[in-house]
Each structure stands twice: as C-alpha cells, then as structure tokens.
Length: 274
Ligand SMILES: [Fe+2]
Image (cartoon, rainbow, N blue to C red):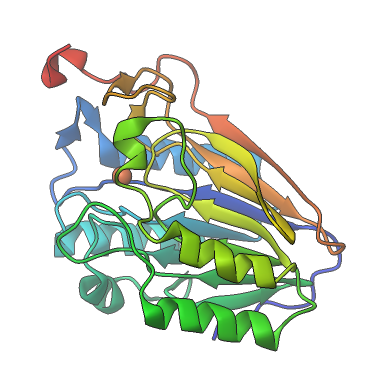
C-alpha cells in the first residue's frame, strides 16, 4: 500500500482521465492527436497547479492497448515528478499496466492515505466489455477497507460512473451493479466522494442514499469530449481538460474543472459522419 502522510493543509489532486493514447503519437481519435492533447493538459496542470500533491488517472489510458503507449505514458508521468495513481478503464489491459507503468512516480496502488483522507481505487473494467461491473472481490475489498478505517473521509475512484448522467447511450455502458455499490456506501458515512471517468464530460452531482450523501464527479477527457445530456452519441466541441480537487482535513472538498483554451484540439466531426 502506498501511503502519503504529513499533510497539514488541504490535499491538492488533479484527476486526468480517458487519455486514449496510441502506440503511434501521430494517430488521432476523431481528429484529435491524443498524445499531444494529453501533453498539453499535463502542461496546464503544471502551470495552474504548481503545488499539486498527486494525480489520479481514472482509466482508458490507452486506445490500442499497446506496450508503446503504456511505456510512453510511464515516462511522461515519471518525468512529471508528481506521484500518479492509475486505474484501468474498458480500453485498458491491466496485466500490461502492471508490467509497464509502475516506477518511482507511477503507482497502481489500491489504497492510499493522504492527510486525513483515504483514497480507494477499484477496478470496474470487465474484460471484453464496454460497461463496468464491480466484482464480488472488489466490493469485499471496498467494504473491508471501509470497516477498517471508519473515521477517515474517503474518496473512491473507478472508471465507470455509478450514477445515471442523463444520456441514454452512456447510461447503458456505466457501472452495471450500481445498487450493490450504493448499498455499501449507505453503510459507511465516511464516503464523501466517488470519482469516475468514462463519460468524457464534466459531471458533478450529489447522490443521496438513506443514510449518506455522496458527491459524484466525472472529469472531461484529455482528448475527445462527449456531449452531455444527449441521448444519442454526439461529439462535443468543448476543449480537453482535467479536474482539480482540494480535500480538507475536516472531510470537506472543493473541486472545479479546468480546460484548455477554447478551440484547442478541435475534433474532426466529418470523421464521425456529422
Ligand atoms: Fe474513454
């Protein structure tokens, strides 16, 4: 288990998600060269958040499951010299991630302590499927951790959103067993935040269970965006970005999304038939 201690003020975290990198840096997704947009987002993190403590990368790190894409990502993150914690999305290959990502600054830890907070990273990816599912083993791991640390405000991160986003096509490919997840959350009031990727859009909503109230967050992709609240798949022209979170010792949190300047890395809508 990776542990980071000795925080006195708030913990400053950047969430980067859905990088969709290729082996070939010139390849693009919907007209956006994913390596270049990712590097620009990384530069913006450095410019706007000089005091950042760590980064969470919430899946779909690669588009083509290539060794080269993971090796290049590992080098970028290691050179960045901020501890990065990575988890798998539906496009990822977890065994490859375990071989090629870990280094001094890149981790696949399942949990970490930062100041008063505990962060749990779960695997919601299902081999060969686009939708997500938290296996019995993942849910047991979650509940055992929550039982062991009842007094630590907790952030849970995994790839597939655990709530409906109001967009039918995305809601069909989110976390399948949301009810099981929320039943656990209902028993553990220390859960403050659930952090996801997958939806390629900004999302921020409180989810109420009978005994708990949890902030559910999704960040934009570092490359292509999907149009929010549209029941059909539609590419959005908003710029790539990341989410900044500030976790305070009393269990409160502040967050906002930062994007590249308007017009950066525009998608090629003709490439998807618009
Ligand atoms: Fe994605």
